Image (tube, rainbow, N blue to C red; front, top):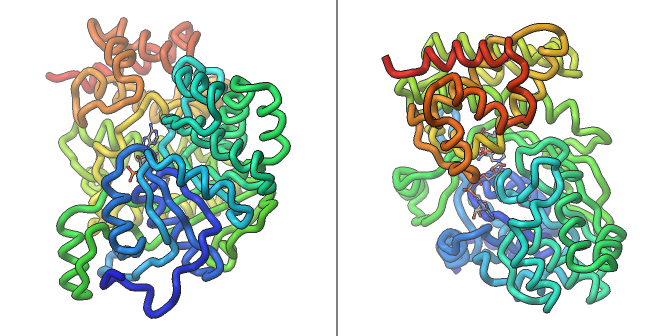
Length: 449
Ligand SMILES: NC(=O)c1ccc[n+]([C@@H]2O[C@H](COP(=O)([O-])OP(=O)(O)OC[C@H]3O[C@@H](n4cnc5c(N)ncnc54)[C@H](O)[C@@H]3O)[C@@H](O)[C@H]2O)c1
Ligand SMILES: O=P(O)(O)OC[C@@H](O)[C@@H](O)[C@H](O)[C@H](O)CO
């Protein structure tokens, strides 16, 4: 056992699997689970093997650094029992065949669900995995939808009973979204498999919130200095945390609610508030803030211009939220405090990744509502303009699952670029001349002088 032990307690039984072992999972779902000693995790990385190896060498234990204005708090989290690399497919199938494994949580990024523009599965992107599963249900597959289908098929074949899939990525209605891509893929393997998995799988919808930046070598040193423990993979997060879930758990679940999670019938109001206000403002800061030379959220929100743009965006989004306005006002005030936490170095370049996946979720719903009300929203159009400027080489570097297409769309004379990028985001939108003119005017302000 590593020096990072579970304070004399035995490891909990593995009753959960996770896909997308990374920082957020370790600051969020694993922490809620740690409050219930009856449930432990087998966690799999989405792609790389590196973190899984380091974590498994520590018996799954790691230090959670909760970083507030008044200093750091250090807790050893022991709910992860085994950490596996993505390639350990036989182990993945093995856990899913276990009746006592009752749920699979996911944090694999928005892009990993491989949705087509209509929200269904992008079948071309998973053609190899479909062919492999048609030939052999236990064949190694790489994409997230195919790994889920392979695991669920193995479970069904083993007669292990129904299970819950619990996506924890920043996607609206994430349970229904994941249901659709998983069942599309299962049906493409065989119609019968599609029906079997539809009948035996519950897709839970969640809203997740806890700002979790990428840790650095300085965080490893901070743990050593404060606790005397050598931890190769601590995780840093803010004090705030929120988890809202709706859906069935046919094989049970940990007592996440006693650890502070909200169990509800409708995640929608929580999710809109969080995706538009927090994530929308994050995207604005990631593009506009990095163009203004800032590196982190805390730096950008301290810039009066950026702060004003964020407030303007919130003024546009807030009236479209269904939660009571005093509650929304309280959330906005808390967000300003969270964004301003200088102890958390949340890098804008991390948030800037995959704008092609994020902006349709974070910004376009508000834009559509504002246009339906006859207004041209200045905050929303500024976010789009800043993204276009980012794609044209300004601010944070471009990392995007659709980089080839969106960077090409953003190239050349600015008026054509604005039209092409907007059309990429939402076909037909470029016919809205007032909207295009507003985005163009703001994009012009972001052009190099
Ligand atoms: N970090 C946060 O503050 C935060 C907060 C709320 C929600 N989230 C959600 O969690 C996700 C992960 O964030 P993180 O901070 O843990 O990131 P991370 O980089 O630490 O971990 C991401 C995990 O997803 C896997 N992955 C990435 N792209 C993939 C792909 N295309 N296919 C398969 N697997 C893939 C990686 O291998 C890794 O296991 C976010 O994209 C977001 O949806 C993050
Ligand atoms: O994690 P992403 O890449 O979906 O988005 C980046 C940030 O906006 C996001 O991680 C927030 O920090 C998070 O959603 C806060 O709960």
